[in-house]
Amino acid sequence: MGGGPTAMLSVLALLVASLAALSTTVQAQLVENFYRTSCPSAETVITSAVNSALNRRAASAAGVLRIHFHDCFVHGCDASVLIDSPSEKDAPPNGSLQGFEVIDAAKTAIEKRCPGIVSCADITAMASQIAVKKLSGGKITWKVPLGRRDGLVSSAADVAGKLPAPTANVATLKSIFAGVGLTTEEMVVLSGAHSVGVASCRAVQNRLTTPPDATLDPTYAQALQRQCPAGSPNNVNLDVTTPTRLDEVYFKNLQARKGLLTSDQVLHEDPETKPMVAKHTSQGVFNEAFKNAMRKMSDIGVLTGSAGEIRANCHRFNA
Ligand code: HEM
Figure (spheres, rainbow, N blue to C red):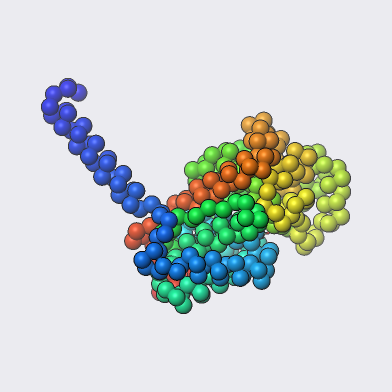
């Protein structure tokens, strides 16, 4: 290509076109105080409804955090996981999701105040932030940018390969997280969510062989074998040390070979992720990194502008 005025002009035209495209993308981004004019009390109403629901049932806080993760990894954070069967809810990893009543309580409250304005996707993202704040004793908190819209698709088939199995190795975990734009370190940090909540014995059965998985601390393995006899319907705490506190202790447990799931413990066994586990045993480092990774996760594949819809009921698409 020559360097004459025509070439210069086409470069300039390209630049203008890219800037225009960029500004459209920027406009489509989420913003803080999105409902400032359309529903000024939105955040207050949702915060209060979510907190009341979490006060009624503390176990739902971990549930809500997991719902948000499962929502964002399939079709982006668009509330597709909230749709009733036939839907994503029928896919095996979603069978044990719990805490939906928290989102329902917030949606009911906001529909009374501002009908048809606030999306189920935004409510889920906010509820997840409120749950994290509560679970971390107020140490991990941020302001959630808003403006998500609700998706129009929810199918069990779409979940396949998008959500990691508890038996996953690091290569699989990395590839699933990379598929939604998250780095290996963000994958390690977000696994820190397993510092709260429970898993079914089924999810750990692969490690309770005779002899047990060699990467399990022997005393911990014995305790798990007692809690989870073959075929047991029981649940076990994901974090054996501080089960109700979202904190860096999860990473210390991994160093002590007391991670519950294979997908937890492999993070300490793999040479690439092992130093990341060590780094996040620091409370300050983990709290900051978890907040940033959550912010990023809450932005995955969001629908904005006129895409999707604002559902009247989070369980169903609008007619
Ligand atoms: C890294 C890959 C991950 C795998 C393989 C995984 C897998 C699992 C499994 C199998 C359970 C227990 C389900 C059951 O048996 O009932 C669970 C629970 C949970 N997961 Fe994950 N998860 C991963 C990442 C995440 C992320 C990124 C988050 C959130 C940011 C998260 C949040 C939770 C929470 C809070 C629970 C407990 C839920 C409750 O008590 O109801 N997980 N996860």
